[in-house]
Length: 115
Length: 111
Image 1 (spheres, one colour):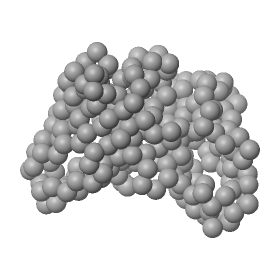
Image 2 (cartoon, chains in turn blue, orange):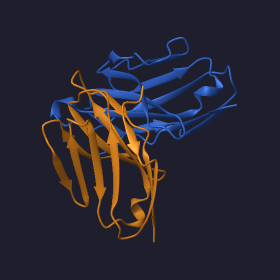
Image 3 (cartoon, one colour):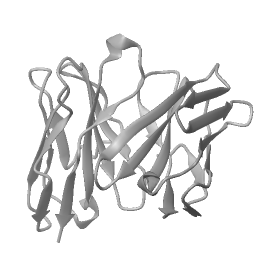
Image 4 (tube, helix red, strand yellow):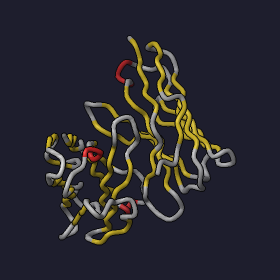
């Protein structure tokens, strides 16, 4: 079974520029999550999708961050414009809620550096 | 916001020794999960314990949960150098599948 795919793996941008991250979850997983992990901290949930609908985006800074999952499969997370404090690893995870198992499967992450 | 606090923040042991990490949380939970993160394999799920369970085993891992104290512990027995990683506890509340992670414990196992 293929895992969660993310791209790019690394990205360096200057502040006020825009950036987009892509995630392809495990096939059949209806639930998709985006997390932000700042160095030395645990991941923090930014947004949760169930199919193509948003379940929880309470911690998404909506003035600069946006995410979509148009066909209920792939997802993109965008930052526009980026700030220095957005430097972090952005993790995508997916889960199959139909199995009753609670674990989430994580992708390798995109390491963003904002200079 | 971070739900859990983990203790210790860093732990260094010799190969073959046992490693114990503790996690405390603040609100009632549906389940608690432990994840491992290293540079080679990203964040990987280790074990899940439900709120009505007190202890669970998986290979060299043993997890306990005390809901009255809102705390959990992860024991890794007979540690190996390959266990070197950061370990995170994460809680799921009663409202749904949202994981709230702790700050993590950085484990170093020296050969």
